[in-house]
Image 1 (tube, rainbow, N blue to C red):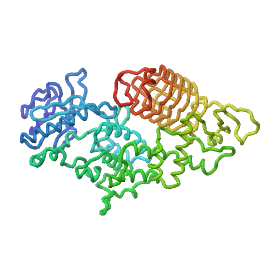
Image 2 (cartoon, helix red, strand yellow):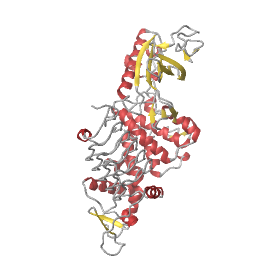
Image 3 (cartoon, rainbow, N blue to C red):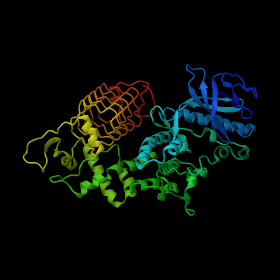
Image 4 (spheres, rainbow, N blue to C red):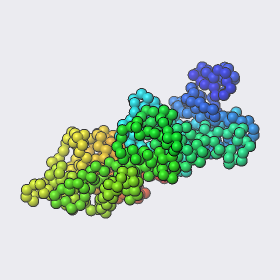
Length: 537
């Protein structure tokens, strides 16, 4: 079907190969190139259509967004044009991120404004919840770990999304990654009421966003970066409850959403959500990075508490804790949320991380309990529970034992020899492989999110398409490793050996890595650099 884009057309549906609309005579091929095939959505100020690009081989799908000014006065039309151009520049600026649709074209035709964007095939989170029900706490944390870096990226480009909600988040069919869509091009309202105001007021004096998801300051026409944090928090509540904001009660005195009685999550996560949903901007998280820091400490609270309560015999220091790139500011963010007991645990965790970053191994009571062995200065020795002083080498695990142990709760595989194992598509997120040997190990497509590979040997390991987001790889030996298409976003790669490693198509957005390291590896135009941009330069 060919769909007419004339807003006044009485019958916009036409045969597939028609050149002009049979009802109104409008040309059905925009710029003799784009043919709309069906409407995707429509509002008071614009519409979105699925279309075909008939100038390219295979006629790939794209999305056409049409902005329709509601006034005809020349100066209002000029303001609409300025808004349109500003939105197009914004989309062009941030469209290099793999989780933001690319801007393909923009133009004006018959006093209508058009944006052409990459088509993202998949289902929205709104549809996902309606079909499958609410997310678990872990599911929502995974959602945040994937979307917060995207938010951090667009904020770093001085862009406020202003309409984050489940309907604007698509899980891309081809790789199951979340894509943030709809950057407000059709929501910039310019109408006759604005014509009597100053130009600045006319461009900004409209509440943009979705009621219930947008915070008070945004509805009062004063959006800030933290406004997106609030909308993200409301999205989390929707994912946990399958209830939209209009289905929830509000405190009439404070305007706060009353959501806690509808969910069952850990106390720490409740506090994180509370701070994301603060009505007062001053008391809300100010950036996506602050939320990430608050969430990063939470997985270690239980293990840190155990280390404080029952220190193993002969151990004078706390057990090592696996950390990604967390700053000392995390203690304040997480400590304030989890209570005074968490502050000491967080401080101890940060001290452990600092010690490790300086190259000093900390004695591990937890590892000793699991394997009957402890670590002292990097040497493997008998633990206090064994007899004699003979050194003992850990028994090598096979692939099935590794995954089975992990599924039963084991996370510490430090110093293990796991070379040549086939762990393809294994789920080993958050696992500790500090100083482990994984030479030529097959980890293709594995989930290694936030795993610790500090000082590990990964020579010629197969890590193609693996999820290494936020993984700790400092001082790791990755010579000759296959990292094609791997997600290394926000990974810690300082001082890692990347000589001959294949990073073609890898995503290094936000990764801690130097240009000198990258120069020793193989990259191509599909490699996403730490800046979030693709290309060799």
